[in-house]
Length: 94
Image 1 (cartoon, rainbow, N blue to C red):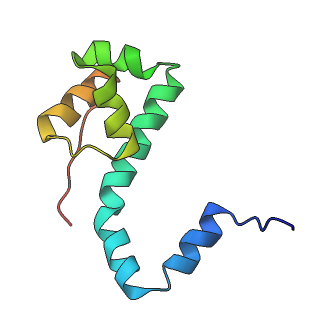
Image 2: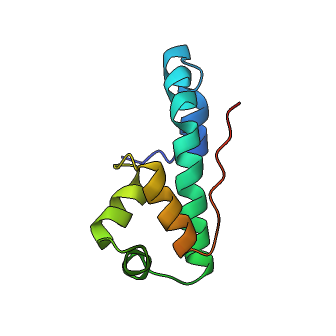
């Protein structure tokens, strides 16, 4: 029996054909874009989740939950994370 390999992008594009899925995906898109930016900034600085947590004044598990999307952070928490990364937080209404 052979395995079928499919990339994440192929699977996402296929799922986005479903209107209900697409609506939910669009609702969550800003959250995942913010998470992506946090992870990128942390990795660019060769910083571990534990190091970021220490700078923020929280536990590593909170950073892990944030980066995995399993935590709905407050604006204050995102501001602390941004500052700990040497960044500023910008929020836009579109």
